[in-house]
Amino acid sequence: MSIETYLRSHIVSLLLCVLSIIATYFLVRVLDAAGNAALLIALMQALFLIVAGLFNWFSGRRFWEGLVEIADAPANEVLSLASNVVEPEFAEGIIVKRALDNTTHAANAMVGSLNAGQNDYREFIESWVHEIKTPLAAANLMIENYSDPRLRPLCAELDRIGSYVEQALFYARSGSVENDYLIRDVSVDSMVKEAVKSRASELIAANISVELSGLGQPSPSVPCDPKWVVFVIGQLIDNAVRYRYIGQERSASISFSAHALDLKTANECVVLQIRDNGCGIPSADIGRVFEKGFTGENGRSRKKSTGLGLYLAHVLCEKMGLSVAIESIYGSWTCVSITFPRLKP
Image (cartoon, rainbow, N blue to C red; front, side, top):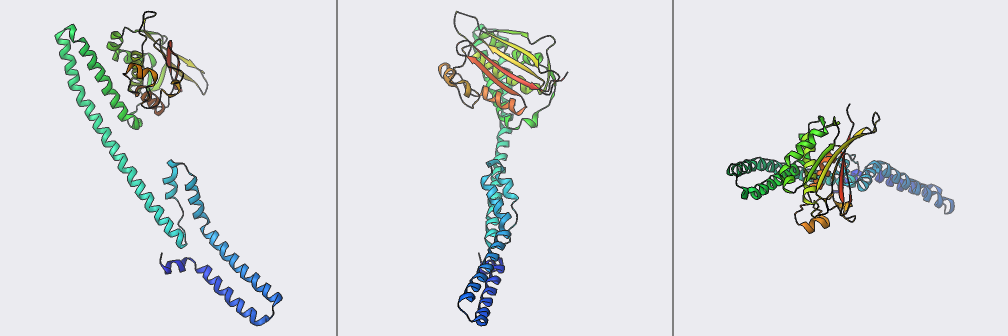
């Protein structure tokens, strides 16, 4: 900070100090006394200093209040608040504002660079997924043409690869659902059947029976993007297959049901429930199953879990304005509920 800038920003304080000195000099000359004169001189000096302090406080009050607001703001609001700080008129504030603007500019540039990198990565993943689908489809077609039962395990593994590829695609898109989201009125029954059909080979291989009678006739309709919802249901089916019950006491099954709640009210909605009679979730894990990468006790014991299925289901439902909840009794069953708001007649 140059001396010129400092003096210019404190010009009022300097003038008041000069006036205080001049006034003190003349008062002492005129009064030529020790008692009351000295008290009067002290009071006048104090008055000038108070006025100077008040002026400095008022001139910088809005600027410093803006900085305090930034200091107390949540992280996601800091940059926008920093951009709106008022321009100060005093030297220290001018330097702080310049530093703040420079920091904000650098942070915005960094965020822009990160967003561009994420967009490039997402576009690469989407392109890669579309390219990999071609050889996967060709491999499945060749296996079907040979009609050799010994190749069925290979076909099942190719289906698993296809499922993971689909998961990678939706994971890459999960940060920008709004860019690829088309809402229309769709029956719950049609979405469930499409998801079940896409997982038919896995369900058959795992000997899991499917119960659809709970969807109702006619099945309720909900406003949503069916492509994203079918993917979410598919992830829940994958979980039911992965953590199915293996034993002699009961046969593995998965059931779907849908029902409307709070009809003709502001809270009107449709709840889709996906229930399986698999191994269930331990009570210690139930609160964390939607966390990214969390596999829990079941995932560690079966060693096939990625910890992404339920995480993606939760993230996508949240971005679509749906709510998802899970209940379970360890060793007995698991039930996932997806709530679709604003039911249309």
